[in-house]
Length: 329
Image (tube, rainbow, N blue to C red):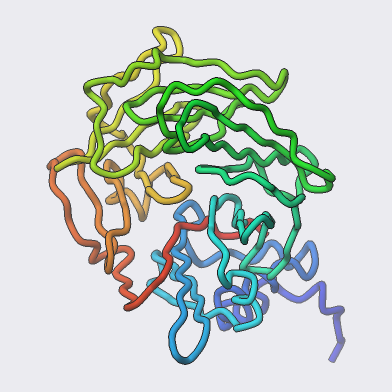
């Protein structure tokens, strides 16, 4: 029988091997070589996964839940060491931005890779980043305010920098509630829907709305920003969920009554995804975690439901549950 090199195995055999591997190992399998990368993924790539981490008497626990497969993958203990006593500030592109005391670093729970950033001597309220920290154009952004809220502190850096670059601005007695990146700008929302933007190109700051609160925007919990194909969405919650879109022409928040084929996933970093094909039932919904389970709010029915079809995952004593984008190996 004629032998053939391992990189030239038939796609049918590769698919068979791939389908029998644990879900995270499937990613490692696909990056062995260029031909193996052609193996088909067996999950909905546009949906975020759930990362859960907690500690009990048996020690640290960390797992991923893949909603489209209703599978849970347990992460090894050596990966959990990086999450111990660290706060998760942001989650994008399969990476976590973590803060532990004055240390700030990126961590990839799929590969266990760590990318350290310079120590930060000031505390911040919210943070995010532009792209994968392995990309040369990655910029990390953190914003905080003084105790009296009369000063705003903005810090930026990139992997490989020796220190953070910090700018101090005059505040207006409002606390920053969320931040999101879109098209070269970091948008920051303050209580009452007050919106400002930091422009990366010239390192400048601008208020986009009046500093007085918008009476239509009120929330029992923190306001959350979502970037969706260049649009900046704002989600507030009282008895129901309200969605607003920032109109760049009129510089005002406008009501959104329909999400179209989009679904929103709210968390430390919020995501908007296209819900089409097998996931079309998710369109028009806002997914969120409320201990101990996941729920969604339908803009169509204006009602809240517990998740039965997607995210039916309940972990007792969980110290953290966040959305995380699956790796794009």
